[in-house]
Length: 199
Length: 101
Ligand SMILES: [Zn+2]
Image (cartoon, rainbow over all chains, first blue to last red; front, side, top):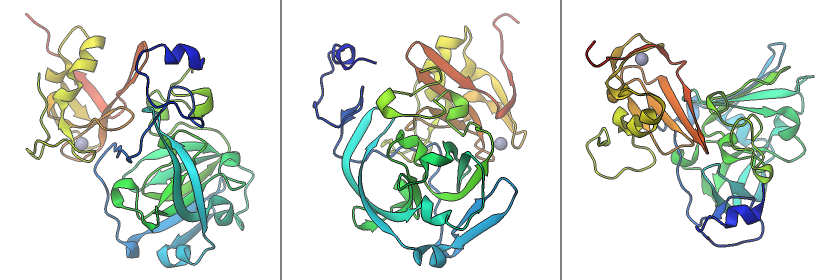
């Protein structure tokens, strides 16, 4: 996908290094929702990892908060073409959550309160590439942005960073999630402009 | 065809759904009939009504139309350059009225 042909469209926005092809820079934080915003009381929050053999490991909010957290600054890229650079988050890496989980699975399905799902290859969740984030910009994550906690996987389009997460299902085969089943790309690399199926 | 936020307010924020007429434009490009007048049967709860009465969340990577009775997703519409994806797995069937039928 050429940057040159994209630039020809006339809608010339701020040109900034660090922007994947076809993206423009935004300074606010647009709210995209596929349904009503769930309000999850912290005493009812729980995150569960389920392996391909059905073995479950789960954390309630207190246990989750006791895990070692990291502060990260990352760029995020939405498939609706806005990008936001240098966003700051605090969360627990997926690597930390999977430390004592025994699996040979290569794929995963991320599950959310409200029924949203998205699929991510397991290797994309490891090595400090993904977190369950519970703070944005130094404050508790607002429900509109996925609070109490959301997936943060900045190297893929932001629909993969599921809001209101409550589980990770490890799978031997790849399966489409909510948007992937409806026409969006199975992987969603913004640098290769993998927006839709067939891209 | 106009769409109105279902709570009657005039500000369409990210969290507020519109009614099913918000899908009229995209669906008119696919079908030769007005699908908002068609009746859906919700796969989640078998509730049935006109497509125009679904709750539509337009501020997302696609249009998400939910059943007003059980809030399950009935129709998803994803627009890509040169194509439209229509995901109907949440509807058991669509009953489309035909002119002069
Ligand atoms: Zn229903």
